[in-house]
Each structure stands twice: as structure tokens, then as C-alpha cells.
Image 1: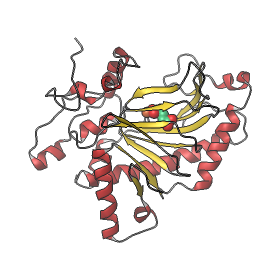
Image 2: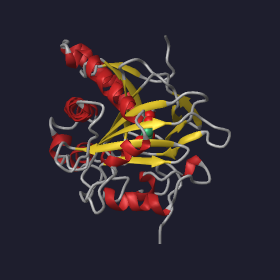
Image 3: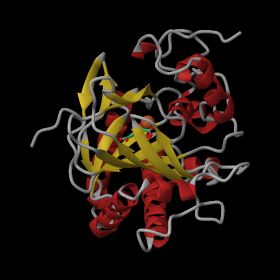
Image 4: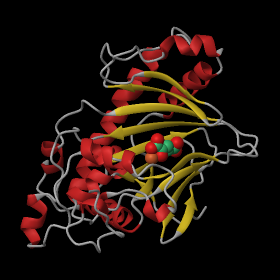
Amino acid sequence: MAYNYPVIDLAPFITGGDAKKKEEVIEKLREACSDYGFFVAVNHGIPDQIMDNTMDATIGFFNLDLEEKLKITTPPGAPLAAGYTKEPAKSEHWQMFTPAPINVFPANPPHFKETMEEMWWKLDEAAVLVQSLLNDCLRLPKGTLAKYNDSRGTDILLGFHYLPATETEKTAVNAHRDNGLFTLVFENQVEGLEFLKDGDWIPIDPIPHSLVINVGDALQALSNDKMKSPTHRILAQPGKSRYAFVYGYMVAEEKWVEPMPELIGQTNESPKFKKFNIKEHMALKQVFKNPPPHWNDVVGVHYHAIAPSVGATAVTTN
Ligand SMILES: O=C(O)CCC(=O)C(=O)O
Ligand SMILES: [Fe+2]
């Protein structure tokens, strides 16, 4: 089947492949991240069975009575909002952070905690691989991105249940861009995720056991605009629930994000963005609330552009 967006087979880095095959993958990733800002990865190393177990467990959880699900609501005053949240008429989700006592898990379905923690470490492994491939795409010295992005404190895994579309609710998640380095997504073979490219929405046609991977705002800035953080949204589907896992591979909230000196030093290019941190970037997104009047106004790193021509119209916040 032909896709109108990049579908990239990572097998040479998983099951082994010669240097030429690996370079071909890097080339495809480089193009995908600059032209689309996203790609679908197959043979990414996460076993099908683990993805299936995770999906079954999360659907089992969402099928419980509301009273049961509310038992894992975030405890008041918790420093990170782990647990269950319901957005009336649109969706419900639960979320976890790096395995630690801060996470809250339901007693049912059985083994929910173990299933999700196993998945967490597989996603982390896939993310470490993707980070190192993107490092190569940017022609950075080995390990540069990993050394920079050395805190795993705000990585997040969300399990979503998007409710079927109704007459009044057709959008499950408004157009937005992700904050972190990149995001990994997999879902239950129900469409709905769409990316904006050159003014058109591209719907993703789910491939079983694939990962949809998109660049986040931090990576767009670190790469000095070589990689783009794409605007995306989720449409609710008539008559169908969509279940999706979203794993955000983040940059620590207080860390400076700016075009990497190792990158712009090599080519003598001018930095396109002022430095910012994810905390202030997220606050900016609160100021310019979703949904914006038009999706071209979705907040992204162009709000930190040195020259207002980068990406889209820049605005000042004061
Ligand atoms: O459900 C998805 O496919 C992605 C959701 C999303 O874009 C997000 O949580 O940032
Ligand atoms: Fe997103």
C-alpha cells in the first residue's frame, strides 16, 4: 500500500544491517523530519505482544465503571499529575511518569501496573534509539543529543480513550504542536490522527504495531529549524472509540533550549531562535489558548524566532 507520508523501516538498526542500509534509513529520517516533521516507524523493536497487552489492559481499564476509574484520580498536591482524568464528551485518559511511587495504577485489570511498566521501558529503549538516529541525521558528534537531554524526569506516557464523534463534538484534540524532543504514538487501528503539511491535513492510516513519531518544539529549536514540529489534531470518529498511547520524550522543563552550538558551530549558520525553556514555552501556550482562530496560529517555536520570518508569523507576548 502506498502512503502519502514517510513510512520508515528501522530493521537495519534492530535486527542488523550493513552500513549502507543504515545510511539509507538515516537519509529517509532526515528528509522526513525536515519535510513532514513526522514518520511512521515499523520494526522499531517493541514486540507486538507487548503492544497488544498494553492496549488490552488500557481498554479493560476504560471499560470499568466510572467509580472504579476515579479511584486513581491524581492525589491533591501531587507534584506530577499521574492518574485518571475525564474530559466530558471528548475523552478520558490516564497517565504515568518514569516508574516511581508517584504513579497510581488501578487494581484491575490484573497486572495493569506490570504491563505498563514493561511498556514504559520498551518505549524508553525505542526513544533512545530514535534520539541517536536523529543525532546522526543532524550530523552531530555521536551522543551529543543524549548528553544534552540527560534528564528523564518529565517523560510521560498517556493512555487515551477518545469517544465517538457526536453532532456537536467532532474534534477530540484541537490542533497543537508537542513540546518535547519527540512523541511516539500507537493506537487501536482507528484513524483520527492528522498532521498539517503545506496547508493540508494528512490523515494517518494506522499500520498494525507501527509507531507514529513526530518532532516536538524542543527538537525544532535545537536543530535550528532543520527538523519541524508539525501541527496535528485528533478527529473523533463516527461510531468508533479510538484508543491511543502517547509517549512524550521530553527535555527537562528548566533546561535552556536553543540551536545546539555543536550544530551551528559546524556550519557557521546563524541561530534562528532565542533560548527558552519548556516551562515558559508551555506557559506561552496557555496564554494563546487552544483552539486558536486558525491552525496557522498554533503556538510553536516561531514564537522564539530571532527573525520573524521563521516558520510563521512571530508575535510578542508583552
Ligand atoms: O492520540 C494521538 O494520536 C496523539 C495525541 C496527541 O497529539 C497528544 O497527546 O499530544
Ligand atoms: Fe500531540
